[in-house]
Length: 205
Image (cartoon, rainbow, N blue to C red; front, side, top):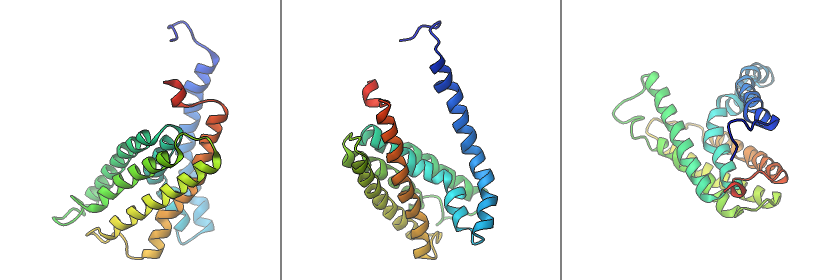
C-alpha cells in the first residue's frame, strides 16, 4: 500500500493522463464521426450503429463483456446488471422527455427489462464460457456466443414492446446483433493485451 508521499510516474500516466485521453476520445469520437459517416452512408445506418448506438453498446455490451472475460461470470453479470439498469433509466428519460408515456407504454415496458437482462447475459455467459482463460480463440468464441444470445433476447423483448419499437425485423436484428459481433471481436483483443501485461483483477485480489 502506497503512502501519501509515494508518487511514481506511472501513477500520473495511468491514473491521470491516460483516463483523460480516453475520456476525450470517447467524447470527440461521436462528434467528429457523425459528419463523416453521414457523407459515406446517407441512410443513417452507420450513424445508428457507431454514433447513436455507442452509449448503448458500451453499457449493454462492451463493459459487461470485458468484466466477464477479464474477471469472471459474476463480475460480468454484475456489471451487466448495473450498466443495463443505467441504460434502461436513460431510455425511460428519453421517452419521458418526448412525452411518450401512456398507460400502456414505457412504464413497465418489457423492452426496458430487456436492456438489463441482455447486458447481464452477455457478461455472465462470456465469463462462464471463458472460465478465466487468456486464450484469444476461447475468448472470441465466448464473446460471440454471449453476444448472439444476449442480442436475441434484446430483439425478442423489443418485438414484444407495446410501443412498437421494431417495425422492420431484419433491419432491427442487424442493428442489434452487429455491435455485439464487433465488440465480440474487439473486447477479446483488449483482454488479451491486458493478459500480456499481467493486468488482471484476479491477480490484484
